[in-house]
Amino acid sequence: MTAHDHQIERDDDSQSSGLGSYLPRWRPTSSTDLGLAEKRVLKFVQTPLKLYNTLTTFGKIWTLQTKNEVPENKVPLVMLHGMGAGIGIWVLNLDTVAKNRKVYALDLLGFGRSSRPSFPDSVIGVEDQYLSSLEQWRKDNRLDRFTLMGHSFGGYLATLYAKKYPQHIAHLILADPWGYSKVPEVRRQLPLRWKLIVNVMKPFNIFSGLRAAGPLGPKLVNKMRPDLKLKFNKHVKDVDAVPNYIYHCNAQDPSGEVAFKSLHLELGFARFPLIDRISDLDKDMPITMIYGAQSWMDPTNGYRVQELREGMAPVAVELILNAGHHVYADDPTRFNSLLDEACGMYENWNAETKSIK
Image 1 (tube, rainbow, N blue to C red):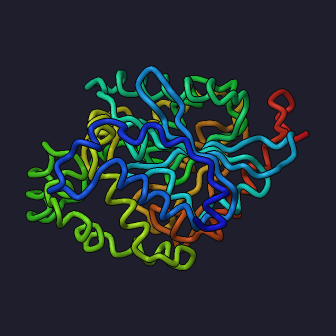
Image 2 (cartoon, rainbow, N blue to C red):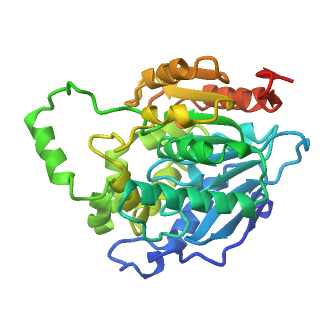
C-alpha cells in the first residue's frame, strides 16, 4: 500500500451496483473491475479523499468528498459528470479547486459505481427521478448551500436541479452543457453514409457497440478515442488508466444510457431544450457558462441566456480557445482557473442588492 492509499477512506460495501457482478466474462468487466479502474485513476489526486455511498430511494450514489482543511465560510462545490463518465474524470481538476473549498463529486445514477436502476420512459419521469435522487443525496450529505457545476449531461441535470431547488444553490456553473440547443429549422445535409449510420444506430444506446464488442471492447475505446491518452497523460502518468476507466464505466448495465435516450431527440438535441426553460430559473441565481471553442456544443446559447436574463443576477460566458467538449481535460489549467474564480466570486452574493458583500 502506498502513502497515498492511506489518504483515501473507502466504503466499499456495495461494489455490485446493478448487474455488473453477474455479467458474463466474455465481456471483460465487473463492478470489481470498475472499482479497481477508478482507484488506478484517483491515485494521481494528491488531496485526501473519502469515497462512500449515499442511499436514495432509487439506489446508491457513489460519492467522492475531499478531506482537505478549508475555512468554514467557503461554499462547497458539487460536481456532476457528463454522459459515460464518473468521478474519475475530474482527476485533473480536484487538487486545484479543492485548495479553497470542500469538493463533492458523485456518480450519477445509472453511471460509474452508482446503482443502475430502471428509469421511466418519459422525459418528465426521468428528470423527476434524477432530481429526487440528487435532493436525497443533498439531504444525506447535509449540504444547505453550495455551488453546483455540471459538465455536458451533468449540466442539463444541474440546470434542472437549480430550477427546482434554487434555495440551495449559491452559483450555477455549466461546463459545455448539453440540452440547451433547439433543433435548427434548416439542417445541414449529412453525407449519405452518415445518414445511414444515424438511422441504423437510432434503436440502440450510445455505447451498445462497446458492449457488443466483448473482449475487443477495451481496444475499441483506444481506437475510437485515442485523444483520451493525450488529454490526461501530462498528469496521469499511467497512460492507459483513463481509457481503462472509461471502458469499465460503460461496459456495465446501460441504465443511464437508457435514461438519456428518453431525454434525447436526435443528433444531440434534447426533447425539451433548456433554452426554452431557462426563464424559470430563479432571477437571483448567478450563472457561469464555460464553453470549449472547438466543441460541438453551441456557445451562442450562453449569450442567449445572458439576453434572456438581462436585469437579473449576472450570467458570465467564458470561452476556452484551445478546448473541445471536454473543457476540463483539454485545457485543465485554464478551466481550473475559471472554475476556482467562479466558485469564489459568488460565495458572498447578496441576492437582494445584487452585489458581492
